[in-house]
Image (cartoon, one colour):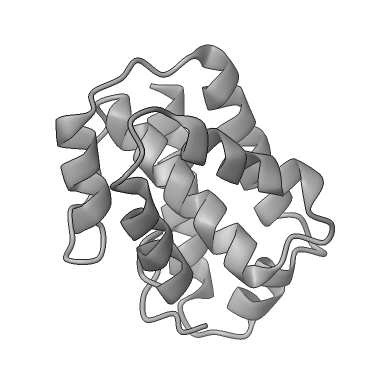
Length: 134
């Protein structure tokens, strides 16, 4: 899987996940993706990237838009066409998923630690976390 930036949609897995979101009319794909963080052990790179894309989508649904990019376009369009209220349960699941992804034994974290942009990626996740808490 290719990753080209620190954003949640800056990788193949997230872009492909967002394309599947287009056909969904509820939060089912988002909640099932969040469940990967609880149920997939260990959470592989593709799974973690999909989970982060789902969390970014949740933050945007809450009104915390963040960055809009070419890669988030499918999710941004879906959000525009499917405004929904996000429950505290989903927000809590999202926060827990970020914790799983940033644990020392996380596969994605280990991959990012080897990259020049590791510190910026961690800052990006902290910004995402803060957007969920607003």
